[in-house]
Amino acid sequence: MTSAQRRAFTAAYLGWMLDAFDFFILVMVVRHVAAEFHTDIKSVSYAIFLTLAMRPVGAMVFGLVADRYGRRPALMGSILLYAAVELLSAFAPTLGAFLVLRAIFGIGMGGVWGVGASLAMESAPMKSRGLLSGILQEGYPAGNLLAALTYWLVFPHFGWRGMFIVGALPAVLVIFIRYGVDESPAWVANRSRVRADATGARAGIWSTLRTRWPLFLYMVALMTAFNFFSHGTQDLYPSAFLEKQRGYPLETAFKVTIIYNIGAIAGGMFFGAFSQRIGRCRAIAISALLSIPMIPLWVGSSSIVGLAVGAFLIQFAVQGAWGVVPAHLNELSPVEVRGTFPGLAYQLGNLAAASTGPLQAILAERHGGDYAFSLGWVVGIGAIVLSVLALLGPEARTVELASKQA
Image (cartoon, helix red, strand yellow):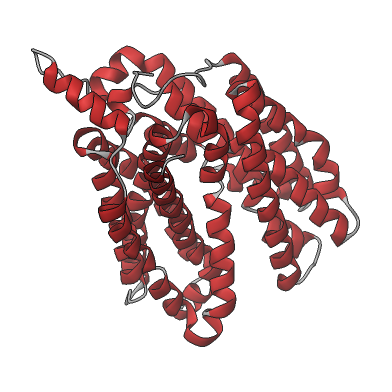
């Protein structure tokens, strides 16, 4: 990689990691926010739902900016938005104000992945794209780990509001992007082509969707399966399964969370790089199917050591499949709308899978509070559906993102 390519990738990775860091800060302090506003956890949890629900809006808004004005200004704008709202959240006077701010935070969060992934993948050399895709995507669990560390260091001294103040630090990243990162070569080349065109025609997202809607719907379906698969292993496992059903203390659940996030990062890097050799679709399918034999250990082990090993292994497989996503979606997307197309598909799939947690809770309640049953079946079925969708889809890993239309 050249120096310019490394800086572009670093900007995209840090933007996504710090985005996840700011998101998980709230996850860490939900019950403390509820206590201060004299309400219950359920009421505060709507803040998480609103963030997820507004992510497609951010993908559309900042994606349009990225396609028209460049990846860099769109990435800077989305980072400034989520960092500013994170700071304002620290001073929210009421629960209502807090919920509104978290909805706006979702717009900024929704813009970062699509814009950052397009900047990183369009700037990366083809031979390294798979590995870099895995590293980029695993900025999400890295952000989770950073939030957990902040909770341990900051919360005892400054409370939940102090954590949100720390969450404003990603705004500094904008300075690095402004002065240290070059624009995507694919966007520059496409802008020059449009200017040279005698008609001055520019393909927009709506005209592209009218002609490429089967591909877009496929990508949304794929990302819906991806999000059911991953959220099915993450959302209820620490609290509902480890703490409630198995009776382990919070400290133990926290340690297991750290262990499986390390597994997630390793899996994303491994399968991202592996996909460069065997193809994106096969790498996704293999990784997803590998999670199935891990399920008995993940939710059925009688010891905490066994559960921790199972959690590490299943996240290695789950996030292994996810590590392929940034490269795969960008390779499938037309260059004229690559700032919007993959990010919007990603976030719509995330929205469609927002019911994963409630679905698993309902299944558990119908089976006597057995979260092992609900987690295992949802993840197992999700792995099969994801692998089938991946194998039925198109492959484009050899496309040259920097100069050709995907």
